[in-house]
Length: 437
Ligand code: ASP
Picture 1 (cartoon, protein in one colour):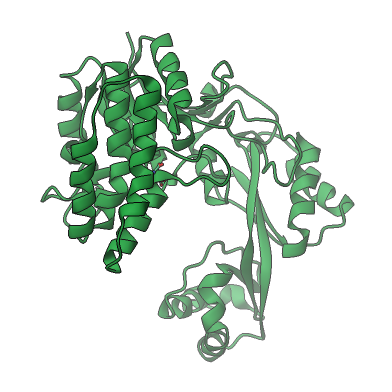
Picture 2 (cartoon, rainbow, N blue to C red):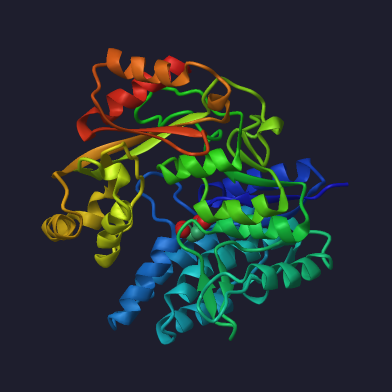
């Protein structure tokens, strides 16, 4: 029998009603042996996330202010869940101990981690499952980098000892045992790490949406959902702004060849989105899988006659960027032209200096900077096999009267990236979506 690891996000565990849904889901499939909870999220739009309250407590404590009121809100959230679930668990002493440590220790990660820690204890009690403290088995090295192999070794040994267990998300520890968290949203990463260590056949990531959408629903009304995609496609889409899963949650499961299934706690019969290793395993949908993008890029266009035969030209341009600590996103080139795409926020401070330096070191015929460009990636494994994809995409943009400022087809043939003026971003995404959906 296979093992499934289920991670539940903050909104899936925000109150007792949501805990009940989670229990039902877990008991419905006996292969769901390990569960990774987030901290309680928002119950309604204006509500606080417990993690945000914990960071706030830490900041207040650092400023020498009293945290009674702020910590009281957190304590109240947990006590309400315990009471509404009818549990006899008493967390008073452990909550007081945590409060003292938040004030005394100079460690924001410890403060933040308590959200998942206490939610994990409650979930373990409610399920009658074992509780495993992630600080003991999820390890970071001395430089604060996640120690994947060390973790995998000790965590897989530990998991073998438990029939069922709750492993709180978001945190682990430094080699000396003090708590360290992943970046925000990091419970997704813990879920992936536990899946790898358990040798799971599937990593279920339960959230509050039905899965990935082909395009941003704030731009396209009711976009189609994506039934399945590969980890590579997901990486391209997330890099360009589509966010459902933490970026780092891909690596442990991808490495172990474990598929991830994004599911909706509030609509558990929906199959969600499957993320697979190989394109052959994906349910074939249309030519493209999804569209993502974001605004605020700068286009640095350089022209010089005979650039193609001038040895070292590209290197010198990039070296200037390196001197200013600026990294680039894309680099489409022509025979005598070179375009460098850079995030506005990276380059805005150095506009004039960079232009000056490139003029000195490369002596171009012309150099121009245009900011406020939006990049749109149209992603799909299907594209490389289908003739006419690019022509459909550009025709759709032309019909919508969108001016294309830059084109880059990734070397993997997995995506076509276009740069358009920021104001035309939404129009361009809609045009591409309706052409292919
Ligand atoms: N509770 C943490 C956060 O809000 C981690 C998570 O929910 O994944 O960022």
